[in-house]
Length: 203
Ligand code: PRP
Image (cartoon, rainbow, N blue to C red; front, side, top):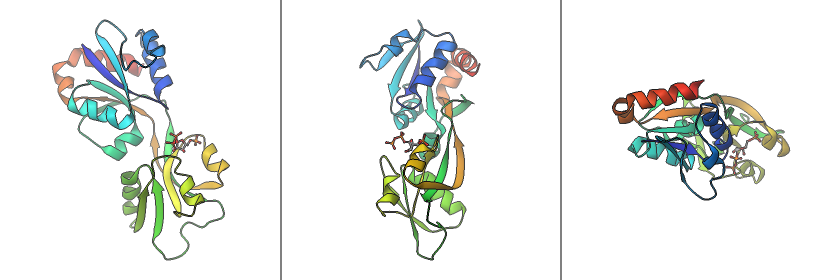
């Protein structure tokens, strides 16, 4: 049996569509109700989990493969193989601030809100800039609107959320998309089955 961890939410529909296109029977996943473990063939089942948990399950080997955003991989790291860019869920990490503000003006230490504190810290470290990073769990755009921070580091897809809240991109940090990851032991122990799934999903 092969078990694959899928990310709930933003990537879910595209992921299910890709498994369907690869020849798996995704009917039960589409009509899952509250069920969390679902078969997609006689030998493959999927589980639905929050993005950071997908990394945990794959790293610990309770799932052989996972589909997760590069944003989560960049933030949490971990020990697994990243074997394919699945091409959907495209967005980017960006630094943004209020439209009327010059982010780099002034000498005080900037404050940055982010759901991705490690990505934000690495970005500013790379620029040699000392900043204070404040972890926010959702709707990060609120932080500069409330004057909590000078800017945000977040994922931008359509740009609508920034626009509707009077924020603009200052700098693009990195592209993001859905990735296929594999447990390091499964890659060896279940080589044929894993390679078959990778090939099917790449198409
Ligand atoms: C993400 C991100 C932005 C928004 C960007 O949030 O944090 O808020 O989507 O998308 P856009 O450029 O297409 O407007 P998400 O929807 O995951 O919700 P959250 O902020 O509550 O986590």
